[in-house]
Image 1 (cartoon, rainbow, N blue to C red):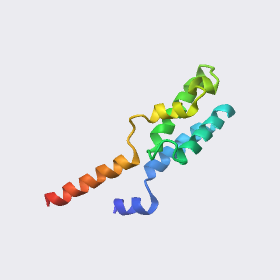
Image 2: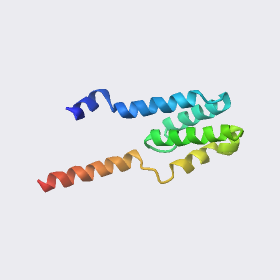
Image 3: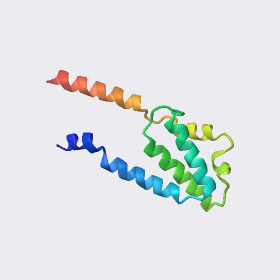
Image 4: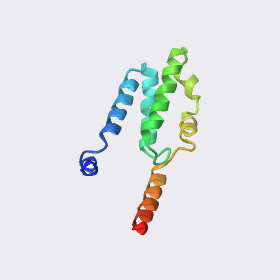
Length: 114
């Protein structure tokens, strides 16, 4: 039943986590929010491949909050090449394709074990 419910309404825990990240991002100073939103646009348009965005954006907000606490300008945190900053955070992250491959292998193994 829980699997069916998740298919109908989605992963509620994931939605809660995403809303919490967005709430933190919305409380950032304007220059940080601007960069955050541009990064989000970059990621949604495939700039880093298909990854689970929750971990990525949590890391970004964590780094931004640390930068704010240290009194840094946002580009002191990201560097001038913001795409490279994002790429450094997604390096070695599991992609959506990786998840699909794992799911395929699990399903085959499970069916062959019967």
